[in-house]
Amino acid sequence: MSTNWEPKIVAFLCNWCSYGAADLAGVSRMQYPPNIRVIRIPCSGRLSPKFILSAFMNGADGVWISGCHPGDCHYLEGNYYARRKFGLFKNLIEYTGIEPGRLHFSWISSAESTKFVEVVTGVTEAVRALGPQKKFAKAA
Image (tube, rainbow, N blue to C red):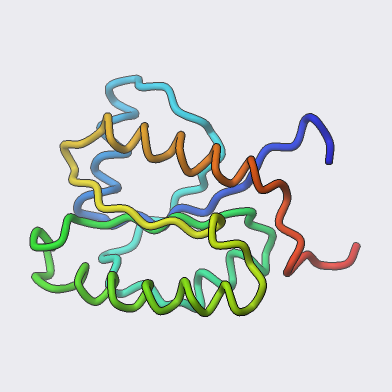
């Protein structure tokens, strides 16, 4: 592994909460690792597990899904569906051989920019410690 290697993390952020926290962190000029590539989604409950697998298959070293706190969903119950769906999905990716530390979930409200920075830093460090993702690596 090269000493210059940095993890590529795909972040699926809820439009109403987690994306708002990312925006607030940026506007507030808070510093956090630049390893995430943000994909804004309407609701964490609408995220298909196929998108997570696709991110891994296209070279992501880690995936992070973040939505509204349970009970505070803009669409009432979307984050409850997400919590159930991805609890099961985490077991599935472990079965495929992807380390569990490559997939992360969190609940961050739009006012929690400090928590956003803490979670980004934690996710980046956890994925960095695992090294490059090789399970779905495409042959060169």
